[in-house]
Length: 430
Image (cartoon, rainbow, N blue to C red; front, side, top):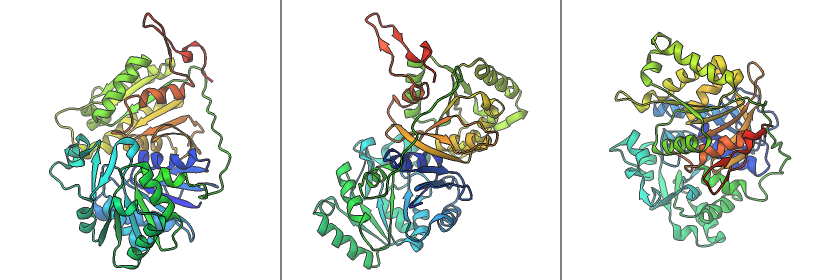
C-alpha cells in the first residue's frame, strides 16, 4: 500500500477510492483494518463513525490510521462534501500524527465549491440545502469555525493565492507548515484549482495530509507520477437471469428522483418497507410477509428496488439501525442476487456485513463518484458485483446507469412510436 484513505462511511470510501482504481491502481475498500487487503496500492477504510460522538469518532479514526499507515505512505482523510459527520474531530485526531491538514472539500464536478472558507452547493450556501437542513438545521457550516471548535488553529488559502503559480504556492504552503497553523482551508471553484493544489502538495516534503471529498482525490489520482499502475480486471459476469437488487436507504430528494427514473426506464418492481416494520423487526406482524415477498422476487429472477419508507416518526439518527434491519430481511435470499446497487453508506455497509463481505476490490466508475467493485471474499463464497453510491449524490440517471452496468446493457434504443428495446432483455446477460 502507498496511499491510505480513511472515510466515515462506505459509499464515501468507495467514491473517493474509485478515482485511483480508474487510474489503473490496485484499490480495495475495507470495513475493518484487520481485513487482508492483499497487494493493494490504495486502501480505503470505512471507519463507520458518522453516527458516533465526536470523541469516539476521532478515537476510532486514529486507531485505523495507526494500524494501517506505514512509514512512507500518504494519508487522505475523506470527508463528506456537505460536511456531514464528525469530520472536524477526526481531522484533529489525525493532525497530531500526520502534520498539516490541507482541507479542500470542493467537488466542482458535482456542484460543490468552496469560497471564503464556506461550502457552496450549486452556487448556494450549504446551510440552505436539503442535505444540511435534514440533519443540521440551525447549525453553522463554516469550515473555520468547525475546525477551531475541534481544537485546531486554522488559516485560509484564497483563490488568488492558489492561482498565483506553482513556485509561489509551494513557498506559501511551506511557510504555513512551519507556523503554528494546523489546518489550511483551501478555496476551490474548478477542477483546475484542485489540480494545482494536488500537484504542489504531492511534491512537498513537509509533513501534511489531505482532507477532502472525492474531488481532490480525483486530481491526485490523475497525477502521472503518483504510482506505478497495474493491469485491472474490469470484466464482470453474472449468472443468466440472476436478479439485480437495488437497495435504497437514503431519503434525500436526489435518491427519490433517481428511483423514479429507474422505475420508469427499467420497469423494475418496487417494494417499500415501512420504518415501523423495521423498528420492531421480527416482532412486527408484517415482517415475515415482507421477507417472503423479497424472497419470491429474487427466486423468480426478478430485479427488485427495495426502499426504506418514511413516516412522521423518522429520525436521521436511526438510519444505521433501519439499514441493519433491512439487510436482515434480505440476508436469507442474498445468494440469489446477481448484482447489488446500494444507495447510502449505512445501507451498503449493513448489507455487506450481513452476508460476510468485508472488502471490495474496486474496478471502475459508473459515473462520477458511483463505484463498481467485486467482493474480495464472502462468508459463503457468493461474490456478486456491487455498486455503491452516496444517498444525496449523483445525477438523476445514476441508479438507472448502475442497473444498466450490472445488466451489461446499453441505453435502450428509442423508436419513433416511443417504444424501447432493452438489449439486456434480449439475452445479453453475461
